[in-house]
Image (spheres, one colour):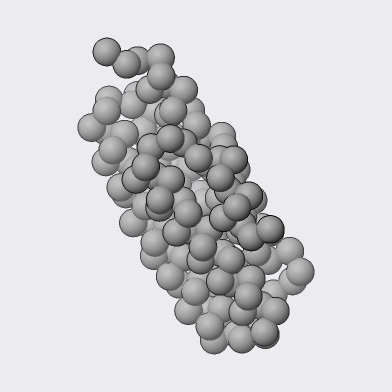
Length: 132
C-alpha cells in the first residue's frame, strides 16, 4: 500500500490541507521509488522539493490558522520549525554523507503523519469546538 493510501486515515476534512498533505506524501512515495533504484541525484532533488513544499505548506497553514483565530499559532510555528530542522538534517545526510538506510522514508512518513495526527488535528478539534 502506498503512503497516500495510508495517509487517508489522517485527513483533516479541510480540502486545501488534505490536498497539500497528499502532495507531501506523494513526494515521499517518489523518494521511496528512487531509493529502490539507488538514484541518489533524484533522491536529493526530491528531498529539496519536499522541504520546499513543506515550507510553503507550513506558511499556508499558519496564515489559515491566523485567519480563523486559532490561539496556538506560536507553538504550531515552533513545531513546524522543528520538523523542517529534522527534514533538513535528513537532506544533509543524504546529500553530503550519501547516507540512506532502510528506514529513510519511514522516518519522513513518521514525521509527517505524527505532525498531522497530533498537531494539525489539534486545530480541527479546536475548530469543531469554536464554530459560530
